[in-house]
Amino acid sequence: MDNPAPKKTCCESVGDFFTSAKFLIYMGHALSTWGDRMWNFAVAVFLVELYGNSLLLTAVYGLVVAGSVLLLGAIIGDWVDRNPRLKVAQTSLLVQNSCVILCGILLMVVFQFKEQLQELYNGWILTTCYILVITIANIANLASTATAITIQRDWVVVVAGQDSSSLADMNATVRIIDQLTNILAPMLVGQIMAFGSPFIGCGFISGWNLCSMCLEYTLLWKVYQKTPALAVKGGQKEQQQELKQLSPTKDLENGQSPEESSQPLMNETSVAAKADAPKQRGWCYQVSEPLRTFKAGWVAYYNQNIFLAGMSLSFLYMTVLGFDCITTGYAYMQGLNGSVLSLLMGASAVAGICGTVAFTWVRKKCGLIRTGFFSGAAQLACLMMCVVSVFAPGSPFDLSVSPFNDLYTHLIGEKALPEADHSLTSILSGGNATTAAPAEDLPPLQSYMSVSLLFAGVIAARVGLWSFDLTVTQLIQENVIESERGVINGVQNSMNYLLDLLHFIMVILAPNPEAFGLLVLISVAFVAMGHIMYFGFAFKSLGSRLFLCCEPEHKAETADTIHSPPTTV
Image (cartoon, rainbow, N blue to C red; front, side, top):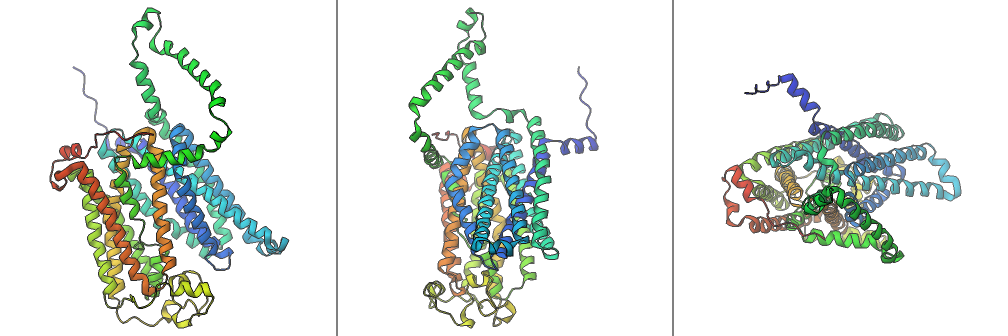
């Protein structure tokens, strides 16, 4: 009898974990996300500083970024699918960090010589610098999208193997890293800019990305070496299986293996394809190829079994109930100072981490699809506090005030009364004291019940929101075939950006605080529609078993498997 393998000591187990592919992916993701969060926070501040405390450049940058991902999401995903994993990861990493470094250097030049540049050619040189900054930053964001698709939606799946529990744990850990870096990274770069200057902030971010790029490149290579499955993509696997299924009888008669006999045929086919390519694919065909890729990506997304689940997640982006500039601007007008807002943002991050932990526990007990159903129900229940806040004491909600007053005022050029001009756009545009009075100068609220209920609902809903987000992410990972993961996740990102754009347009059309309650009600309605879509997907997949929440884990996993294969393009 063979002697059993000796048990590893605690130190050996810890050492194995720190050198495993999973830990290396976590480290690479932490470095990448930290740099992204610092840059996303800083670039908005830099653009405001450059344009004289106005949000114009920031708004243009946001519109360009959202529009680019909306239009190019499917094409980026298709590029991820068509190329080897290591090439995609390394290329997107190099492009992203190089663009951030270049943009940081360009911003340092502009900050240092802004007055001189403004005098050259009537300011056209400075305007060209603004255009270059936004363009390069947009390219960096597109490369970041490619990195997120290939690492978070593909590499993680391959490293986890066929273990659904391991995949869920990896997704939850990646999301916890996102939550932590989303708070800590802006705090760090904010302190550097506060005690230093925007010039120093640009230099720090450029230096960080240079060092981070080298470390991430090394970590990606080590993960690739430790996971041989990453070297083979879905299409290659299918091709190898087809070669193995060829009848070996004829090959053996000729004294050749199936692989040897198939090689000349593949070479002849490729040569013939190359010879016919110029005839079949003219100039017009090549020019229109991105459009065909765009169309094919959206058609493939629509034909997926998890289409309703993906759409339900996108609908959650059409909301003002998050800790973005809109909600914080409203809170500022309601009398909450920066200290209270920072504490609320910290509580929101803690709630998000609780949601990721709850996801892994509920999935083991009830299965993946049921986890999404229960998470959605929990989120909607918490958002009811936000609905109540609209009608609670202290709420400025007033339907008698037209939500388009501020928009009409800006369009016709009339000057609103100083005491009446406290719209979200004026607060966020960095105006003077007459148009954007500090929170302490605003009339004191008679009651803080409304704003308290609002943020209590927003924070509590983060638990269900992040658990639901992880559910849909894993559903896409497990049910989209390997050769389409890139394009499907690219289209999913496009849908998310589309609904996010709509929510900003909604705020632009109704920016005054009296209409914020209406925006809250619309947001809750969109969240409810999203979860209704998910309920339709879940009921179609499980039927009446959806409500059997106490099913054992192995039965729940079987019930949650969608057996029909996704439709391919």
